Length: 250
Image 1 (spheres, rainbow, N blue to C red):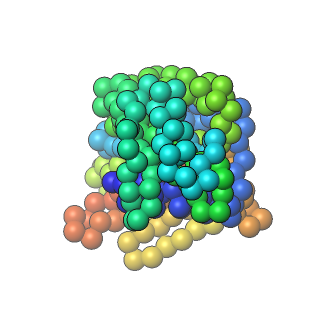
Image 2: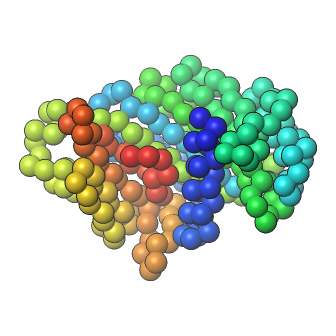
């Protein structure tokens, strides 16, 4: 888990530097989360995983372990998460990580790292849950968290993703994975600006007017990503959708 967090931190940091995130009003972000979850619902089994992730910079770490620990403790307290007393180590790099269940089945994790060559601490606040958690509770958590982030002066980006398997009934309606992923793109009213395909995976990057959060990929604006992967062992189709992009394995 710790190794995964460090890889995620590195991935998000690089992604942010390359693409340049664009973030609009928090209220808009909460509406986008609901829109994503509701639009994808017909194409996904009820057993799915939902991730809300906020990334940004806060305080000063400067590669000093004690400073990283103090920043982590302060953030844990601010978000109602029990404080960790020592740093963890992942891939020979120290990180601060602490987690807590905020509502039934929903776990929030705060992670703090000190990127090489930067004085500011890199922060990831992440909520992982399933469809069993009421959407209204997820949006309420995002709204309250956005307010707390604003009070702390943390300026960053929300990333919302959902992952689950495509029902057999929906699979039978489509002639191919490409047709299915194109159907989902149409449901989001998105224009395809980039695509990728290999033997088991199809992914599309969309420009969708109804989503304001975006990243720049070259000259293209991306608001949403849709990925469909066929598992080699079971043959099942795993669907992942994220706004503005997918930052998890699909």
